[in-house]
Image (cartoon, rainbow, N blue to C red):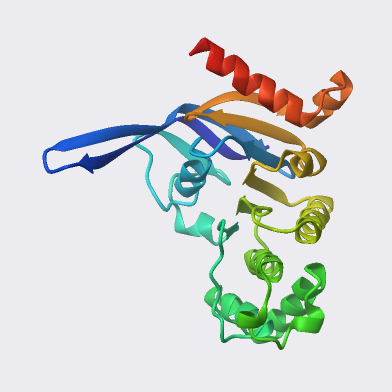
Length: 250
């Protein structure tokens, strides 16, 4: 069963170059893909490949110029669907004067989760992201890795059916990346559907069931990680070979 269906999506941006000229930038070009239930799908690409643009479209933050998409069987931007989604942006900015516990309580109230259930979920989530001992500490005292882990906890407060993560491993030290990777693997064991973008290939190879490679707005490859392992090829080698081949075509 497909949780996400994307069909023929393109996104054209226009920006001013002086008073009279406009520059057109095609960020996504006729992109189609599906993400299955319980799958961890990694969207890979160089900077400015279109990864964040696609995520913004799927989250309803911007509209496609062409094409259509479905999430959880509903077409386009749908408020009912949004209640079943979790999302963490590339650089989450949380309320610095709240504690971890208070922040998750605030998130739970946004979803109108009853107090008793909120408390239960908050404790469980803080355990998952290894922040139970820091639940009373104000977020202004958190490291970037701790903020990232709490951000993931906040995406889970509504028990979402699909979780979108934009560069969850970016800017973290090796210990921070290890912790985030372990959290995603735990969610994978719990059969959560996860769609995330990244350019840290070694971790992606350990986490994902399947990857897609975006290059200059086009989806140029879809690949099962199990296939790569059978072929004895690393994800890094496959990625670089695929990008190089595409550049030669151009």
